[in-house]
Every structure is written in C-alpha cells, then in structure tokens.
Image 1 (cartoon, one colour):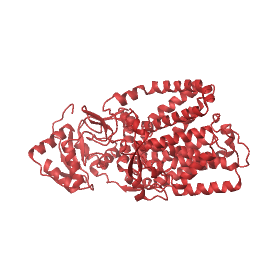
Image 2 (cartoon, helix red, strand yellow):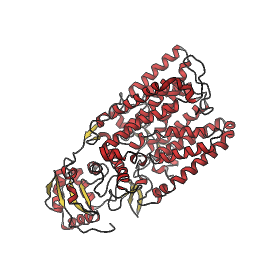
Image 3 (spheres, one colour):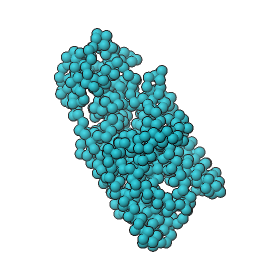
Length: 605
C-alpha cells in the first residue's frame, strides 16, 4: 500500500532535509515494531489515565458529567449480551419501554461493539464493557490515525502527534463522558484512506468492496460519525476537483466506479437494517430540540475545555452546551498552530481542500445563527438553509465541529513532519509553539460519582418471585432521561433479566399523532406525577380517580412489582406518594416493594 498520488503535493522531507520515500510502509520500516509498540502503549496508557477513576470500580461508579448517557450505553451493551446469550432480536429490545419496546436500529445501539464484547458483559458486567469500550475508543482512534499518518510522513514523532490529537483532542475526551459511539472512531481513518485510493488504477472492485464493508461496519458503530465523514469527503473532493480539474477529471471514472461498487456493497448488506431503522416499529423523525439549541459558540474555538489541563469549568459552561459536547476548544496556542500548519502546507492542493472541508464543517456546527460568548447575535449562517433536510435533522449540530478537530490533528502531524526539513530557528519556534499548544490540552481524568448499590432484592434474584413471565418490574424513579439513571443502570447490571416500562432511548414522541423524535416514552399520568415528586419533593393529595389512573398505567406497563430505589433525590416524598397510591410496602432485600401481581395483564398494551 502506498500514499495516493498528490495526497501531499510537495515532498515530505526527512530531518536531513532530503525528500522522504513515499512508498508507504516501506518508508517507515525503519521505525520497527518497538516504535509502534511504544506509540500504541502510550495511547493506551493515556486512555487508561483519562478513565482511571471509572476503572477502579466500573460496575459501581458512574461518569459524573453525563450519567444519563452512561446509563444508556450500559443498556446498549447489555442488549448485545442478550443477543448472543439469550437469542434476543438484533434490532429490537422488548425488555425496555414495555409494552412498546425499543427499535435498536433507530438508536445508537453500537451493535458492532456490543455483540463481540457480549462475553465481557456476561461475565464481568456491563460497567466493565463500557469503560473498556471508551478506553479502546480513545486509544484505538489515536492508533488508527497514527496508522494512516505513517503512510504520509517520515517521522514517527509527527505521526504520534497527529494520532494523539485525533484520539485525545478535547472533543474526544469530552465525548468520553459516556458517548461510547463517538469515541469509537477507529474505522474512520480506514474509510478515508480507501476513498482516497479509489482514484488509483486497478482498485475499482477491490477498493470498492473494501470501502463498502467498512461503511457497513461503521453503520453499526455510529451512523452520525459516518454522516460527518461522508459530508467532509464530499466537500474535500469538490474543493480538490475545483483546484485541480484536469487531474480530477482524469481520475473521475475510476473514482466514481469504485464509489458505485462501495455503494452497491453497502446497500446490499444494509438494506434490511436501514429499512428497519426508518420504517420498522417505533421509528421517528427529527430531534427533540431545535437546531440552534446545541450549536458551537465562536469563542469556544480559542477557549480550553473543562477536561483539559488548562480548562476552567465555569468558563467552559458558558461556551458549551454540555460536558459531552466540548467539540472545539483548541485553546489560543492550539488555534495558532493549526493556522501555522495550514500555512506551512499551503502549497499542497490536498491540504487546502482539507482545510476548506474543516472550515465548512466548523461553520455548519455553529447552527442557523452565530453565537458569541453565549449570546445569539442573530447573524444568519448557512446551516439554516439545510436544517430541515432529512437525516441532517437527526444530528446534534455542534457535533459537526468534531470534523475540524480531527482535520486539525492530521494537519499538525503533517506540519510536524515538514518542519524537520527547515532551519534550526524555524524548528525551535515551531516546537515551542507545539508545546504551548499541546500541554494545556493534556486531558485530566474524568470525574465519577458512586452509583446506588444494587440491593439483595436484585442481586440475590428475589425479584424473580414477584415477576412472572410477561410481567415487569417497575423501578421508582422510573427510567427516564435526566431522572432515571439508576433504574437504567440497575436493569443493565442485572443483564436485562427483568423487563421495565419507559426508559431513556430515542423513539416517537406521541405515536401515531406525533412521530417527532423524543428521548422518552409518551408521558402518562403516573410518569408525570413521579417526575414532579422526585424533582420538587412535593407530595400531592391523591383522589380515588388519581389512584385509578395510576392503576391503569401499571396495567398497561404489565407491572407485577414496584420497587423504590433508595438514596435517590426526594426518596421520602416518592415513598409517601407510593404509599398513598398503592398502600404500605414490604421491605425485602434492602428495598421497599409493592406486590402488584394481582393486577390484570393486557395482551396488546
């Protein structure tokens, strides 16, 4: 394998100032496996440091900055375990959101990760699988970009820097707060490489099929990342063709033929999964928020993320939508060095095209109007023109900024290689700038909190006496977005052996009247009541009509037992309202339990 022609128009130079050989691995053979081992080991060590507090007790602790999404991915990996060990449906899960279930293809189900790691989940617990996947996601993404860069540069240090940035940039560390799907980007460099190589003679079938298979794999890791990659490559190809039309025209036949083979390969394999995603049960369209709710703030580009060494949480919160969405935050020196890298490499058409692609996606990430320092200026931006386009309307807009963050890493790696052929003074200034840029961005360990310990009622299997086949265990607080972390966590750590109503997932808001995407099941009297009690600690007076409405909801949920989770917010108020609705509980296995096995069961919900 070798670097595609014109990937870097000017020769990459070695430390001696001589042109480096571009014959791919042959030019880096001198690095040796010891060098590769040190690189990969450093990435893995850094990833472990970032996750060290979770590694100390993966099944007992929860990532503090996004405990909700941590709970979601505990559920996702447990679904993969059920597929392998229980023969459960690959694309549908009936143990959450009873009686309607969850369309797993319409959610970030990471099937390409959860299914292979099902034995880890089964024997060591979902918490171990999640922290393992996040750790390997960070280190693996860095390693994959290092692999690509070693085909383009002559310096191991340059490739290491580029890989380290791509794997541990503030956006990646931010998403490590629970987003298993977004930190697992190790397929992307291989997709990029195969797309670039489609222009080479003799690669229409081999390259097209390989690319198609990589696309299929990425769909089952994270479709949103695949969309970002496709849009970036589209902008890159258009920009490159505009600057080098004759070269682009000469390669167009091979390129589009290979792309067609890739599309055919992926389309054949993904036809049913994508049909299930968009036309199967519990499908939806759009997101439960407006396009401008989650957008990149202009000042975030020069600020530091809260998990960076130089980061300030209070300042970052003013410029970022959440701890998992610090998608830029290059810092002032970091931005300067990115610009320096572009200037150094400007003679390369490919670099200019990459820089244009990064800039376009950065502007798109800012949403329909420009935000500066938390203030909406009202200045319109291009995203407003496409915000309602299908598929685009499923994206959290600020995440488009992950693209320029990754491109920045590639540019810095290439520039670090190029500087080796420059004079001593230039080299000193460059490396001083790199130190000022990179050191403040060194990631800090992610914060965690202790989760509520699973009670003996769950761990000893006592619940099985109260939950016959076809019935559910109803945890209170109910599994919901922002308020039901422990319920989701308990169900996942119990291997989804019992079914529960509701949950945190993506589905239609109120079918069939409203199929807009929602993070939870349609509201009911009981779900709203329990949410208010947990949130505000106020226990309302329940009439007989109120109790009947609660009973109706429990019947629809096929409830056979209600369990109050201890140590949650306003637990005393929750107990009071449950006593008023259901009577006095039994205290069994460390929890209050209301036996509802006498409730009738509906067949269709």
